[in-house]
Image (cartoon, rainbow, N blue to C red; front, side):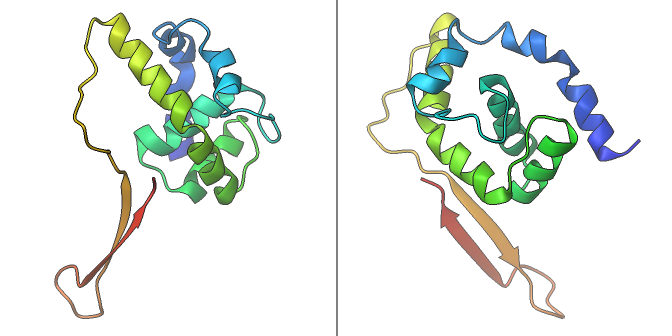
Length: 139
């Protein structure tokens, strides 16, 4: 079975996943600016599924773009996926906080900003390990 088929099987339980999401999560996507217009995607559910392909499955932006189109979630190029991810920050934070509070978990007050970083390792020809690491802050 190809990898795209595996993704489809994993996403078959979307309704089960949605049952864990807080009430009104779709409207909050619009309220927080994650979904100002639905160009290229059908709505908040498709946007969340696309973002989860990138975040939870560790796919690159390009691979996320291809998988989203294969699954019929929407047609976004890698740059559009990146922009959607950036605009969804507050919405995703709200989702996480709501889900944590529903479970009775208290949000940690670290007093520090959490920063996400994407990194690429480069090995020169003949090298036995990583020679260079390029990091890009996402926030």
